[in-house]
Image (cartoon, rainbow, N blue to C red; front, top):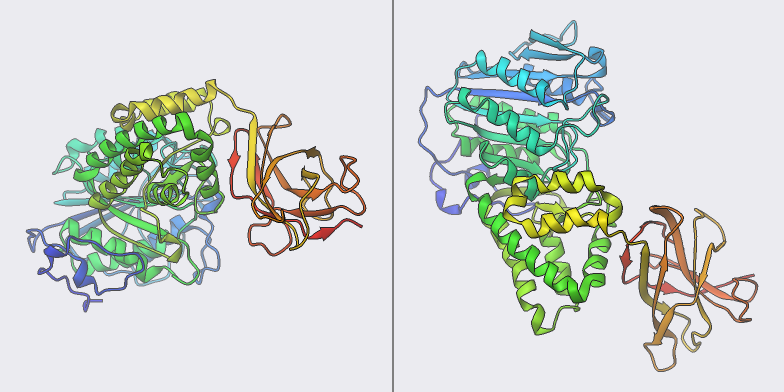
Length: 541
């Protein structure tokens, strides 16, 4: 481990790491004046009373990520310059939230941990801001360090909450988190933490980094909607800190990103973790304000296209359905071909400028192959069915909304302008030489078997090829059964023109990979789905 010695020669590299890169650590570090006698305080706040805390295929005899985090830290020789306290909860603690002073121990614990129990906060929720405050005040009152790193490890729901558990599933919103961190700023030598690591999914958002920009110099976030092995990642950089306590905050922050490379299985894992310079986050907020204004202007003419592209991108499992990566959206807008008119040039420029602002504030990032084309920074982009007036009002209270009032107003108005209409469009194909006539759109809610349409509708369509074997179709209808429902849909040729799919009719499902089967999707009120191509290649017997 000591072979990974910090280089002090490479500030000019701008502290940037490309996705998937595996350069030596020395090539990623920037220097700051440090003292051999400097001390570090490490604070770990780990929520464990929730379903995602369970470790899958662990080689340790543990089932809790929260407990595993402390266990792996206990196995490291402690440098005298580092002090560590951890606040954890897990089912094995019977729901109690406990604070431990973490120290090295070579033996297997007879009980839960070898570390000394400092305080038992009782059966409270880690998602309660008061619980976090109790931990911070307890730990900081017993520490006297030059630098501090705070890690929050648990589940995340974007700006709406993190560190939730069985008692409070959503956890604390980011503005409440900010207030708790500000409440202990007077106990920190620099008026804030040197590093704040949000080890929770869905937390790589503009709303979060802007809200927390004054609480730390460097902020670590994960953006995808996938649980990560945070205990293993923390173990990697914690080992480095114990071996090299002279690391500056910026150097340690670099090691925290590189720990992803060492701990993650890049062949099977799906992840993207980024390091943000809190002092540069303000420029992203300004760029987002311009982008949101241009988006709203473009939506006057192109709302279906804008929302349709959004819905297409949200179909992957990478996102939680209400947060969209700024680079992914910008690239999709440019590639769509629907904004080539000169009047949309300011809109596309604003999208690119937003990505550039994020790149300037992002010091490092590391991710799996799935992360290609992502900035690692999302923003809140709900539909009417994703929020109520309470969520809209809460979003308006975020500090980002003070900068970008236009987007906050758009979000706030969504519940007041409900849309039940769904629009689906794409291409319909039949075997070469045949023509598409008497075309009918159908939809059902089955998971298997032949179609059993709950809707038979006549779409609008126009020929794409001269012989009519490919057509461009579009259908709009009102989704009245529910706010959302799991469906499959397709097209058929109604040969006997009876408005029903029956013997002799040719049909086909929407099939994302084009393999001839079908895909199910969650259809929401207000959805505008484009590019839903259907191959009409089956005969109804």
